[in-house]
Image (cartoon, rainbow, N blue to C red; front, top):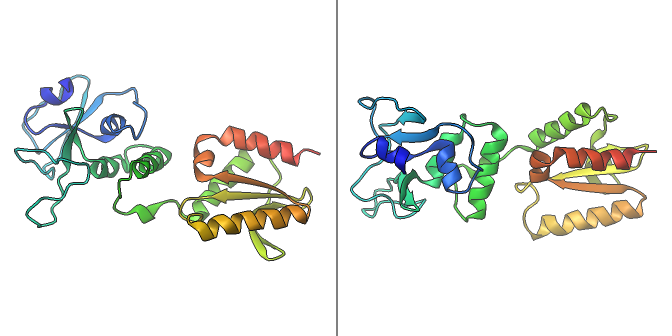
Length: 227
């Protein structure tokens, strides 16, 4: 609040400082990020990372919710609101500000936390493509010097993500985009049961685990590959 007040009328908490306030990300040890609805006229202040943003929608009253649309029906989205009485960018605007200013994995984490808060984000279809997940897993494989697996291999009636044929090991990476809904849920379990009955070990990891716990995944795969 002190940082926002120091930057004058219309100033709001923004970027990863706003993400921390919204509990989308853990606080990052850095200057506090504040955005102001002007292109000039405010001097820099120690300990504050100032963003000049004339596009910020300002009014006498901030938006009453993170995804507020104005009541006159024009569809103009307010970019600011309050949380714990602190002026702050809305969750959508915060996500937009994070894009390109934090590492991609933090952006994905913030989007995931927004979804858990039942905030419908614009461009939600922009989650990682399947090829991106595969490349992340291959990076882990190369980092730990595992034998390279085959990818997208057909076993019986199923196509699996990764296969170590000699070890009869299958690894599946589940993303929310490709594994949501009851049909995908039941198909995954049918696949795992069929593969186990064929003699394969099936390891299944989530997109979140791949992002947040790569060392645990590596240890699990290493144990399964061990003679």
